[in-house]
Length: 585
Image (tube, rainbow, N blue to C red; front, side, top):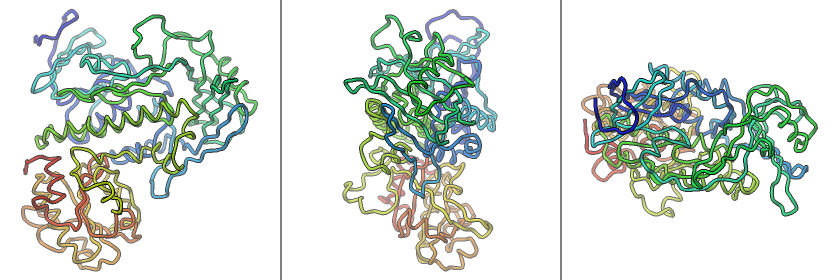
């Protein structure tokens, strides 16, 4: 089949069709594939490598990523494999500067964690296999062309066979040297850091507290850092991934090359040995220690760049293909995973036929500002003294590093709702903000109280209705019936009843009123009802009756108080139109 794709000799060619072709099977590509398959989308995931690399590259897992993996239904496997990241001890010129405790507010369900990237990829790969999809290894994208209806990609397999794959969409999760980004001709502006670093996965015999990272720096006479040791704990007994400046004999600096070439990631050349690591420890370790059990080492460079557009027609970029920056604060992989979660549910709706054009355009609108902020922040922190030097009170700094402050208040999917001053006094999440977890929800058959995230797990859009009094229950039913009708039954709903609500319908686990349980609105089923016995939902979401439309990626699409049928001009109707379009099933 000839498609006009240029370059290369043509041998055996076959044609395979799929909804989405994903290029790159790192954590970002695996997350995108897992979310697409979970939502019923056919996809293929290809990677040029023969197997996942056994390197502890990206190791920090942020609490927000754990929340998203909870929503996807795979967080248990991560909790079993990861170790807690409790804090960081900082030394400057041999003197301890203090201990940073990574403590978040008690309502945040997950803590900071550390997990080698190859373990993250293993868990995501096993999750993807639940849906019957596996990585197509040693398969490389060499070219593609798009038209109004789809994308034709040319792949080359390990055997040299060429495949032309027609997909509705193409997603490039293929890293800092992305073929997808280059073929699209997207700008990737930024620069490179002159320093080279070496990474090593080793064990040490020091007595420093477990679960704490170590950052030790030395300054020259002019106050510039001229020696550095950064250690992140890994699963195992006093095992760390260590970052250090490269000695001259290991320099892997490229000779020549374009001045704007992307120099980011692991470099070829001589790998550091245990002696190189020990030499740095002898200079920089807070106490005498001996390194052993070297599992892996490499030399790497760092650049900071941001793509100008996250999307071009039917082609998208995510993760390192869109943004690269220093590893300060372990933001890169986690930001890419959020890219994937944001994009996947939008592609799923678009493929389902019920999404307006603005839905896919919102991927760039929502994620590009996040990438811009992360690149800028990590560069600033790298030039100073890590996260400790970030401005702001400690709680805000940690919430930002945990990626819990990421939000989309200016998204085209969010209706304008007055000025920031008008919204400042509204308790609970606003449209575009992260949906917080809450505890203490009970049901007739659940002896142990549930979390809100338990009720959202492995679902798409969900309508959460809060009734602070019995009189609000009929409005909850009307809201559920209306959203059910407008979305063709795509959005399930449930009610959280406040502690003061005493109605027979709650005791029966049903909702008063026929509109929610019968006829065209509710599909013949009553709405599930859960009690807010601890009052935690009321504290987190505000005490007034309201309807909350929650997106698949855990952000709030709409909030309407009191809950009622989504009539013209209402918050629910506006959000449904922005996300689902005029389609009514």
